[in-house]
Structures are given as C-alpha cells and as structure tokens.
Image (tube, rainbow, N blue to C red; front, side, top):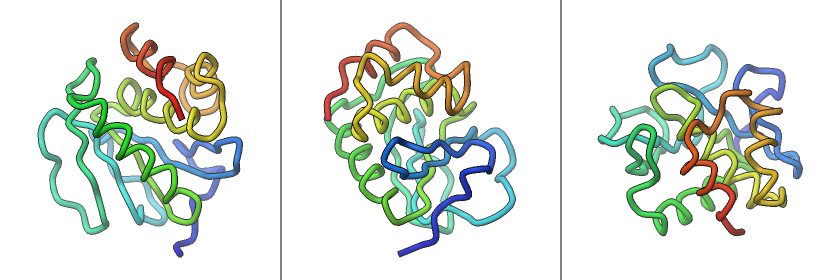
Amino acid sequence: MTETWNPADPGVLRLPSGRLVRGRGLRRPLPGGPTPAYGVYLLAKRPPAVPWEARWLRWPDFRLPSSPADARTVLREAWERAAADRVELACGGGRGRTGTALACLAVLDGVPADEAVQFVRQNYDRHAVETPWQRRFARRFTA
C-alpha cells in the first residue's frame, strides 16, 4: 500500500468515497512531491516510459478511447487502485481526455452518470471534458 495524494495539491480530485486521483497534462512539468504508484496515460501514441507502473489507453486528442471495452477495464482498475495507491490520469493538456476519464471514475464511485461531468468541472477543472462526444461518453458510462 502506498501513501495517497495530498488533497490540497493541484490536480487532485477527491471522489465521494474519499479516493484521491491526480489528473494532469503531460505537456506541463511533473509536479513536485510524491510520484504516482500507478499512471494511466490517455494518448494516441505510446507514452514515454516512466519509473512507476503505468498503462497506456489509446485515446486520440479531442476524441474517444479507441476501444471502449479497454477503457472500461483500465478505468475500473485505476479506480480500484486509487483506494490505496497514488493514481494519476493524464493526457496532453489534462482537460479533455483526462476530465472524461475522471468523470468515468466518478461514475464508478457512485456519482450519477448525468452529474459526473459537472462534478469533475466543480472539483477538478472547470474546462474539463471538452467535446460533446466526451460528455456523452461520460454520461453513458456505467458502473
């Protein structure tokens, strides 16, 4: 078991269960403080190697995951691991794909699917989940 994130740190989302997940943009420098124990990288191309356990979910910018079934599996694993580990979700800018994935984690955590995007915008980034199809993906995501 790893120490979890500090909820006061930038980009850390507290889910209703108390789980903490950090969202971030990979185009920005790695924040100071502890590193993730587990990362999920939402990119069109394989991300560079990191010194912690990581999964790549093929997800082109401004689009949806290439495989919704893989997305469900990877996001469920991230949600489960966030109960005890420092989990980070990241895309290039940290808003669209990351916000959508965080909204899906919120659904897994008990937030009604039709409220998940608003939850993420209020508690993570007001510009999260950038496109209509990303909003629809989160709204249709089921626990």
